[in-house]
Image (cartoon, rainbow, N blue to C red; front, side, top):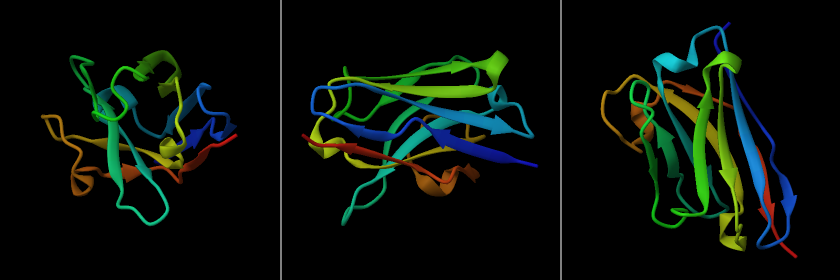
Length: 124
């Protein structure tokens, strides 16, 4: 009933662009802050971006700031992550997740629902 599904991942060349989607089912996504996380091989999961539930304020990890843009379409119950100027170090499995915490956080334990992830590979 409650589900998050990521899509839009794939193989892209360095400097290319990709848009990830996070579609929610069974609950209104607008009631949650939404975070994008990524897990690269051999590395810890890290927060990439998040968007607030009420003010829609966006936050980004320093390594993607200026290249990635998070947005939401409440009518479609979907959150997007537009990724531009992709670098090989962006290669990872990307996850979206929801939290009711009322402040911006990339602490994974603060997030309640998680999608299955979508693979992003940046390589020539």
